[in-house]
Length: 183
Image (cartoon, rainbow, N blue to C red):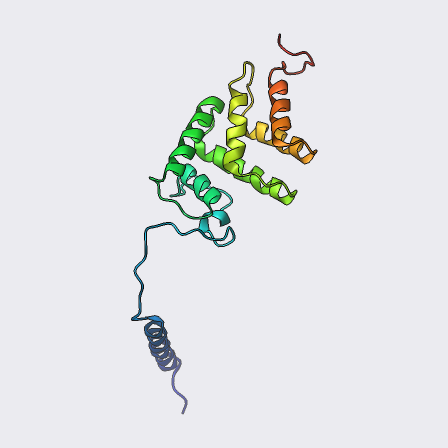
């Protein structure tokens, strides 16, 4: 007579637990190394922050830390001077554009990736730094996302960074729906 279904299930469960325990013990290693707190430069492909393409609202990663770490190609601590500089730049951008630092960082990384697909290499931090002065101009009522879109189009059309920024500054002085500049 064959064993009952509950008896077979019980044996399989015990066997599974034994195999799982053996696998866990086999994975343990007595030769553990002490982790260091000093950031070690990594390839852009292997850096955890370089793999992140968007910060969600609940993300534990601070936008400034994300941008600075992406630029450094390694995970930087919050107290790193490069993170502090990115925090200051994002704070200024947030104040001038009226957007959250997280959204500014997200848009800048999005443009960085779009430009990279076109063979144009520019860091998200550099994009933020280039676009912040435009928001200080009189009549600049655009949000950061709109300005990023226009910047990408100009760069895609072959303008270098300085020419694209100059063109955006000219456009920001125009009244919506008009071809005349404020004078």
